[in-house]
Length: 135
Length: 135
Image (cartoon, rainbow over all chains, first blue to last red; front, side):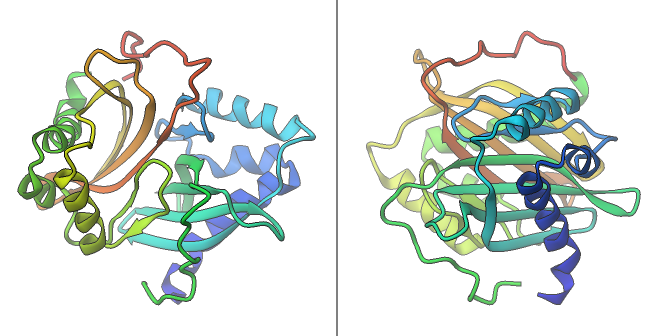
């Protein structure tokens, strides 16, 4: 688990930027040297850095946007690439979204290459898997 | 576009295995040296090679499973990593699913590291972007 700390921090920075409505942080954490993509729940693919950041600009400017926390975080990693799966939900609620976040190593830091979030079926939802030892 | 042919072939091999109910091909195309994850539409994350292949075993054995085609395929790639976004739908229908497929280079071939599929909102769906020149 300790080995994944840097990846988990990169994942957490994404949700922190979301909760803080921090567009500058969001701009910084998405990859710059490789094309990026983003699928918001129910949306079609948003493709390309400008388009992805524009979608976030609108989401962060919307007072109705949720302030999501990540839970059930699990990490897959290899040299230069990391995939994080997690649940997303507001504090105190049952998470209703499942996400796959892909990070790539760019200039010594993990930057987001892909975010795909979609609805979790309301039932049956398996219990969060944070307590399992998987890494 | 030509440069992405190997990645597009790996992506197509995944949908071909799905349509052909070919579990052996499915076993071969998922990564072996790094942990994998899979999100079927509405499902929670399936994590780990055995669990992912078991989920596919059940899907491929179900006569009601759709025979999905990929469309609107777009590729992001870097050294050793490729992300494919696409729509999924049965032949002759409007695709109702959007997917992000992550491939990693393993022993000289592209193997699937992550598959995340979720529902596309029925409206408005943007037109397929295959005609755009993005790579």
